[in-house]
Length: 420
Ligand code: F6R
Image 1: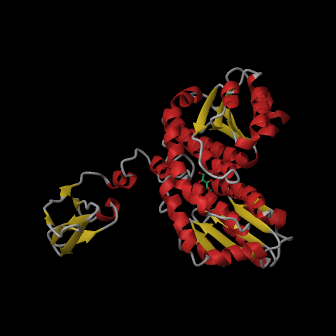
Image 2 (image 1 turned 30 degrees about the vertical axis):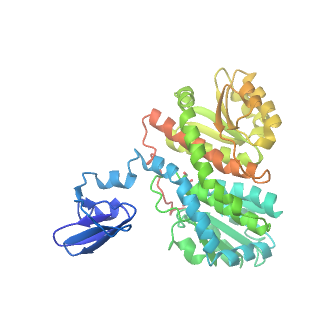
Image 3 (image 1 turned 45 degrees about the vertical axis):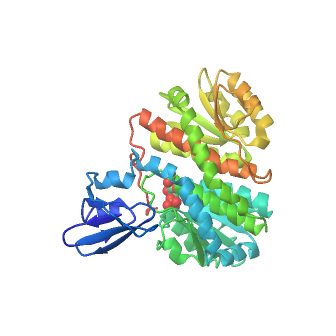
């Protein structure tokens, strides 16, 4: 679009870049060429070179509204941007100069560590399942502040750490890097903010290409971290990656399907300040991430857990109506049904998230169905795990609004944690 004033004409890719200069905006459509000079412009059609007559409009939006692009919150906008940035990541990975050395370092390493905090750690946890499944390699996920205590004296130059961070400035992550450096370990980065400390200290890094993530709860950077790890694991296992190009469309379909199903579930969870989200295998990290999102923006206690661990203690929390959400992979349904029954026979209320399945419908009180996906059997459960977080992000967002909180800026938290 173009900003037009009497003294200058400026061009920008979005409204926020032009609003500080002028509110007099000319929006450009596909197939139009603008020629411009100080204080003037001419629009022509690409097709026939004809001049197009269109006057600028006065835009009333505030800067904040313009940045939200019509969405009520940054979080909702960023949830909706996931498919677009996933497509951009896949394009970038295919052409990144750092990609081949990044993959070689991992392949040649004695041990691989995935090191991060919070949501980025959950991406690393899912990445470790991908490395095991597709590359036959153990990649050890570790919370960054525990890295020194658990592995600080054992790692050496033969090992590599993949440090995962949206901001690239998280102090807990930088502390772990200091240990890794001291031990001579290889340092790779998976990071969104280009120019951040993590990009500078990594031998090689892959950018997440998500653009700005303004909402404090991470959404699009999480899904791109997971996608980058899935891609890397496949490459390390010398497997085809072309099917991943279907993922952006699948994300949109999942989001659309979730939007239509969440109403009654938000209604059920209204007023509950205590619940669990359970997952197993590939969906275990999804359960942890869903629970983190939920507690972060609803202020309720929501614990993510391996579903099979629930019977080892937490089951005692269940009473009439107590909500327990299960994220279900297609390979795990019989095992999960047994976990569901342990909850429902104590009066608990189960919500199951997964592909449509009559067994889940018969045993859970409510379901969120992810549309069936056209992808090879080998990749399907891995892609489902990536997609399953989307309904949980949206559920947390809607439950936050239901409680009249601001999901973008939850109390006590900040986007970048540069303190110990
Ligand atoms: C939760 C969230 C945090 C961050 C964590 C690490 O929604 O965003 O848990 O994931 O603080 O931040 P980065 O990825 O910047 O290192």
